[in-house]
Image (cartoon, rainbow, N blue to C red; front, side, top):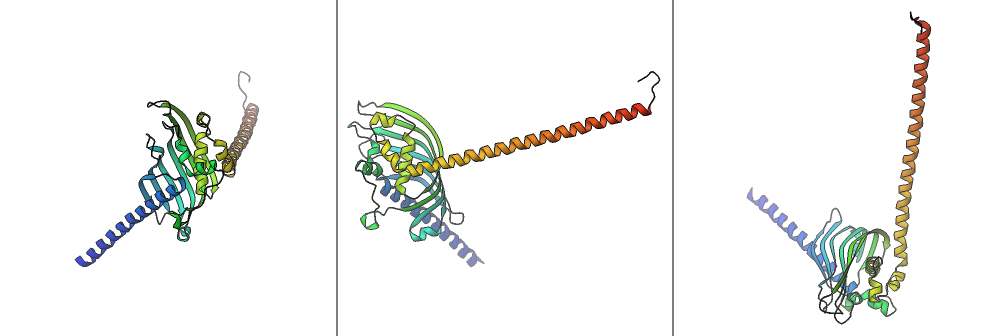
Length: 285
């Protein structure tokens, strides 16, 4: 009797080890993939990958600034939700049917030398050189991941700008963005990074304060930005259609109520006439 129990316990231990190893391997792969795309180190606190339900839960994601900056973190994302497609992974491609990014804070820093932390991103460096970031192969020290995101929901809380160029104590400006937008059909990991930077800075004055070329980045992802407009228009159309249906239903209900009330009033009047004809009161009507 003890032998089957021991075998079952051993199988459970192996499954737990494999599950933990799977999460660790995917976590390391994501960290390296993001570093290849951004050029900066990434840190993830916890990473859970589902096999049966194909869901990924990422918590505590933080992208680090390069060396030479007093502030350690460029941006932090408390939570990321991903619904992925399993089969393309075996062909070396990441297909995400749905992705939700919740960015708590994005910090733009100008250091004592007047250098901007945004300029360390590969997409910004390529933009300054007038070209697109080049896709890397595995032999070049890190393959650029192939990615397909069908639907992306991007939330951005606030942006903080710190300027150390005028002294050890920085001047600080804070901007509440409160962005919540949806995008469709993103097929380039570099476009995803550009989108985050562009939408983070568009509602602030940071680009003007730092002479950052926001227009160049914005122009390179015009198709992605236009997809957000389409999603917004579709959502607005659905809301208007629902409101119209509600209004029509209310008008129909009012017409039916008026008809019922009219029928009841006619019935009361007819009944009163019948009673007057049948009952003779001693003191008149």
